Length: 411
Image 1 (cartoon, helix red, strand yellow):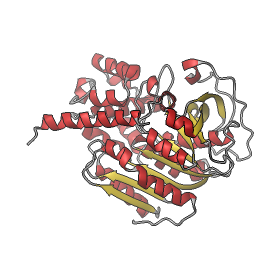
Image 2: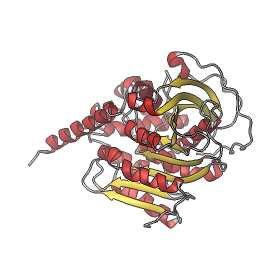
Image 3: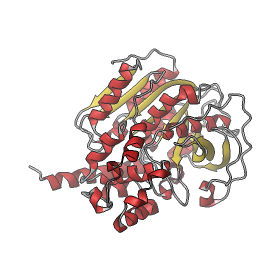
Image 4: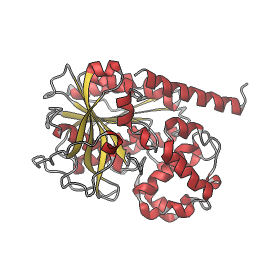
């Protein structure tokens, strides 16, 4: 029988291999924008990394207005043959209800009529806190670990609006798994519709999709869409491996291999809610940890760089012993509001990073609220494996929703 350490090493090697294989294979809600609002005129895009630095002050406008745009690559050669792409910066709304600039990518299939193409708002899984990890950068470099999902959607004729989420610029301040991810995802779709180069329709059918962090973003977008973006023709929501309860998924990671994800959760909460004052909880090792995370950590570094570490290795006092932190965590729990369209939610019963129980509780909460949920589980596979294994079912669900077929709930 394998020792615990051997099993841990096996999991890490498997996760790293799958991530690399994927790369190689491929708060308060701001008032909704009026469908007839005049978009801001995008400015000429700065060159290089300066593209990601938000202008100061931000331009006037409404959520989804494009601030700047530049041509980009849709991924490796297989993706570039399928689609045209643009990196975009657009207006959104942060966790405190204030305007914020967010970056992302709009990808339009070459063989589809953009006037009739459905649009999938795609929330990437965890990329990491460092600027170099921005999904729109990875896609452009041909190094995005969820490229297979993008390619399948593009081949099907769907336009894809990818959000980077908040805070990806040269002085990174990413917020990670907070509810304003939903705003960023919704506004990526709006930006795609308002981007003249894309020629997409304001009346296009829309779906939100994502896995892991992206699954939470898709669910938040689904919950917030009726109030935040009622003009969108939302047809469905797909969320896999969803972290619905930050306490239930984060705290059990202490002392485990994926502890880096809990550290990222803490840093992200502090960026979303500056009054939490993370620095007052850190010791010198903790400040060095934050510098290391934001200086270069992407998904693999989160997984491999903090194995077995604990809160006491970096903090003088646990932030989660403070009521202000716990209140913000509670505010960012999914399942307190309904989703008005069919939802496909899926999870592995053996998920070693995001506990299965909290995902099942989200499904149950949605069912109690009357959400038509199609729920599917996989046994015996890892969190990362399901990134790829779930694509077929996700694509089938999207195809049925865009075709106007009735969804079958198994609540």
